[in-house]
Picture 1 (cartoon, rainbow, N blue to C red):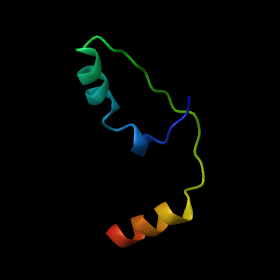
Picture 2 (cartoon, rainbow, N blue to C red; picture 1 turned 180 degrees about the horizontal axis):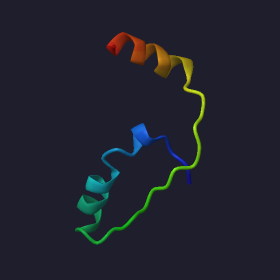
Picture 3 (cartoon, rainbow, N blue to C red; picture 1 turned 45 degrees about the vertical axis):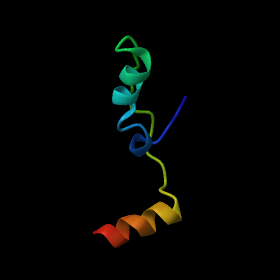
Picture 4 (cartoon, rainbow, N blue to C red; picture 1 turned 180 degrees about the vertical axis):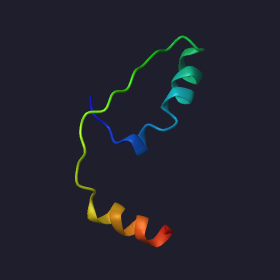
Amino acid sequence: MEAPLANVGDYSTRLKSMTGGDGLFSMSFSRYDIIPDKAYKELQLTN
């Protein structure tokens, strides 16, 4: 399964909460991708 890193930032904390600390997961770099226009514009507004 693929997901943008921005969407999984707190996944470890949520998984531990849901599984009582027993859940495991791993992440690995897959690829760079073009950022959607909406996200690009939001980044411009915050910088």
